[in-house]
Length: 396
Image (cartoon, rainbow, N blue to C red):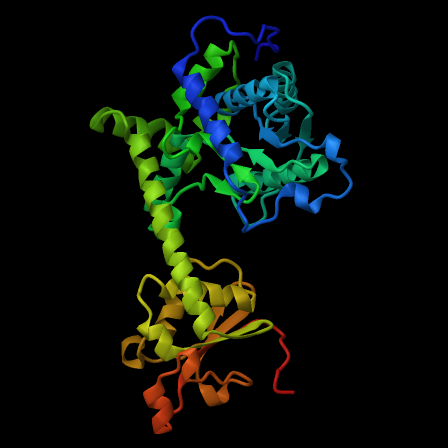
């Protein structure tokens, strides 16, 4: 890859409209209110003096997408609108990865971002694929870098093409609404300016930004490695769809993600409200009345069950495990023998369908969603109990 350019940063003729749109994307992302669901990086930092903090960090790999984002961020720095640095994560997966990282860092410095650091990580797949292990290592490094400089925001350069690939992956997995929502434009301290619903940029746009700024970029060899499903989607499936269906496929899939995200947010809020109303909770344990679960809208039931499992200490559930919990809720005639459980869940949690009188300290009453008719008739109410490992009996 050629060395960093030493060009001037002033205007050289009319501003490319794609560059202008990219700048609007970043300005909007930085102005967006913070996601209250997670603490900001700067909130957990007490050792960095206020004058040494930066507003944001660009995660830059040296590829066209992240280099375009770095160039756009540098424009805001030159205008005095923000203090923005950059961090380059070297995954050490290729023989020349250290040189690629050093070149990317030099480009960010040349653009005027500061501070610019290189974080070297070790990728160790443990029961997960290489992509997932690299992603976990990368985000750990980004989190640490943001805390070190007190950055309020970490900027990621995902594009509409990345979003389209994510939506297709969700479709292929047979996933639900949340998965079809794709990559969130904002989550906690992380913001993805190029996924702006009205202004978003695709991969060709980011290359155009780099060209307009006089920047050359690095091509990640993993992008062409067809051993990865995402690479096959990128190099074969999406180009085929564009040829057969016309341009705009990526933008259309990105719009689908935005619509699905709104729907998923609403369903998640409804499910959280239902869960709060019916759940009897104690440390490592959750009890839900079967009658209330059976009355729940089908779109809410798996969300409530997943929340209860998480409270009991379970790891993330697969669709198959969610289905097993739904079978516990269904009438016995529908589930057949064994419909009462137990159902093992990842993380050592066990789910069982029991009568309320056999569930330790869990005694849900009508206000918690127990079938009032059953309670009035003296018929034991059925409940779903999810219990984590080695939990004390709270009756003692």
